[in-house]
Length: 491
Image 1 (spheres, helix red, strand yellow):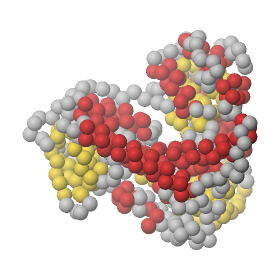
Image 2 (cartoon, helix red, strand yellow):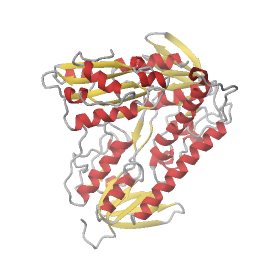
Image 3 (cartoon, helix red, strand yellow):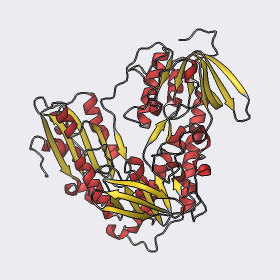
Image 4 (cartoon, rainbow, N blue to C red):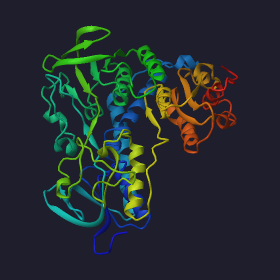
């Protein structure tokens, strides 16, 4: 721990899903902690990303269930929605959780300074408050947890904003975007705009079919927009197993979403609400939109942090760290999206924050990325962990694959969600479980059984012989593991 002449043992810059857990973890282990964030605590995840989008998805899922009530033998007529009420519910959920985080900081005696943090030297951080005043805090260690901001791609006619401090400060992309749409708002959306919309656009084009793009496509399609999802790569959610991606594509198209993969946007005319594209499958063409949602990823936020004052190494806007989450300056750590890691996920940032806090307090801890789940919260959901089939083969494993479809599962039929499949990858000689991919109901919940299996280096035999409750969705995981050995009872 830091010597007592400092104001704090640790100063955390950024109060998102990496920063505030790092602060709380350090405080619970005896550290004197200060956290600095200009915005509400919770970061992008709580205020603009994970929680708002999943709340909207929850409302759309409820709407779809009500519309298909007759499938359950339930009579429900004239089912509709109040978009204002949906957004108000989203705000209530966010406000409640922000208040909860603020309570936890107070409970753990963590000082929260609402301002923009800047590193002056290796042991001093300056916070610039909303009124322009500044406050300096001396510290033994610093954890940088400033996250990321929406990225833009260089397309002729598309504003290339999204990288300056204004974005990170106040969600001000909309104020700077060129052109005002027919709904009285900006015509070009980032994800921040999509979760604060005033109305549902008639025609929505989404650039990027990763997790963010597909989730918003699901939301606005469910609310009545004519949605077109445009992706440069051959598959939707390109990071997942192609077999799972193709299944998701079919299910999204069945819901009414138009999907154009292997398609490049050549130019955008914001004033005319049109874009030109070049597609390997569909040729050249043009799309009209009321709103254009740019969901092509995010960039690490490093602007104005004073990294040059201490000589912290930067690579293409990211802050490289080692397995202890240390930067090139020994007492300064970085976690989450600002490191530009492959897994830019809230729960990864949380664990990295705990690891950084441990090391800052003198407890040597390494970050382990072997069993990290990832999920896409469309309906149905997609969830993955570990290696895909191709990744395992590329690493030289002799793989065995087990699959099981939800259409054959009693619980899935009972809840009218019998679509999708579970795919498990294991190593043939010893049976070690290497990874899994799921597309289907509650995939984000089911994947954790495989996460634990990978963490414990379990074998496919141990998973297939674990008794699962009947009827349950978890039986699909059990049956898939049995299928790897050719022993699935219900396949």
